[in-house]
Length: 326
View 1 (cartoon, rainbow, N blue to C red):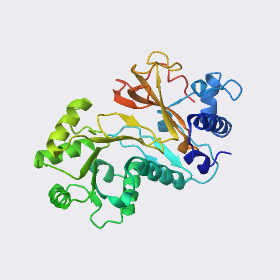
View 2 (cartoon, one colour):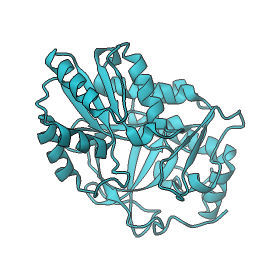
View 3 (tube, one colour):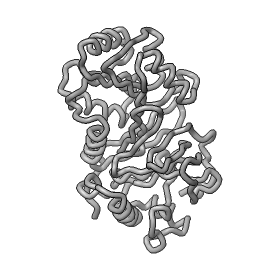
View 4 (cartoon, helix red, strand yellow):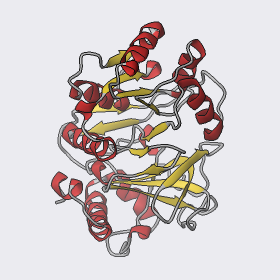
């Protein structure tokens, strides 16, 4: 049985591959939804011998099925955001400690000690509903900072502007993490020249603004905040791990997470480095659910293992993925 210690102490590519195949076998045995999907593709523990043999479950299954690999009681259910009438995803969490260890360790790897930051969170659309895994993570980071100035902001933009200007001038390290449309709202109210602030966007216009390509968005945000780079977080309700970009839209994964790029015409094959395709995610922290998710995002992966997110498929019926209705 793979444990948290196995997952969060991965130190090499070989070790990652070995544990990934063990997790596949464990989830094949214990996740009935995933097993049925694998069976339809004629994949099982005998003929999956390498990572690229592993079937990736279409992310839509989290909207229609209970995707769990453990019989223990569910501690919490995270849900995705969606417009009225839209079916949302449900991610049933057996062990919140896994999620906490995943995001704490990943943040520490990319940014260092959380206590070195004041965390200001502008996540209105997430804060206004229940069940957001992002809010859970950011709340933990705010508490972990042990800083009375850290906190959430909803619609009190003027308070945030005052706090941000004051703290940045004082020379403290600030992490401003916000949903994209709210960060744009903020810089329409005030133009900044920030010297000590990391601005991290979590993506998402949430129907509030027109979608735009990353280069255009980051250019507007850089000018509005007076910073040279915009950081980004890549995560989703159905995962327990995040990848981070320290600028220019180039993401890197923590050691227990990886990205594969599938062919848009054939969901069971992969494209070369630098080619555009669908993003498949391996998230070994998701041991009690499914660690192999075929997302609806488009991206590219590079030979140094970094990747870009380029957008989403135009429709929800990704070719080659919807192979079954259970």
